[in-house]
Length: 119
Image 1 (cartoon, helix red, strand yellow):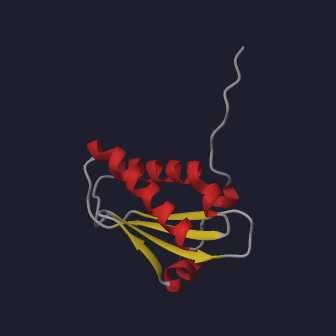
Image 2: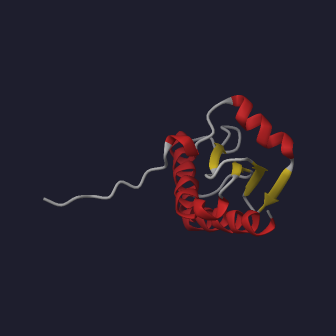
């Protein structure tokens, strides 16, 4: 019998309430790439949290919106160590092709790196 390592994002690492999102968006520390925008707010805890905004207006199909969110969540999960003490909200700015999933992932990682270096 093999054991499979569970690679999930802990519940404490997700922004879920509107007030939490609002606080990060009001802070106005923003990093942008071609298709993504990252809002960041320093917090007093020893872990990082993320919230995702993928509007129906930007990406019509739910399958694509969910795929984009999964890719960004995975990038965050793998790089959250360098984002300790930050609340992050990632927003999709423009529609993207699903074939560009590696580009979405790379842009998310680039924005996380940029935020970690500057804060």
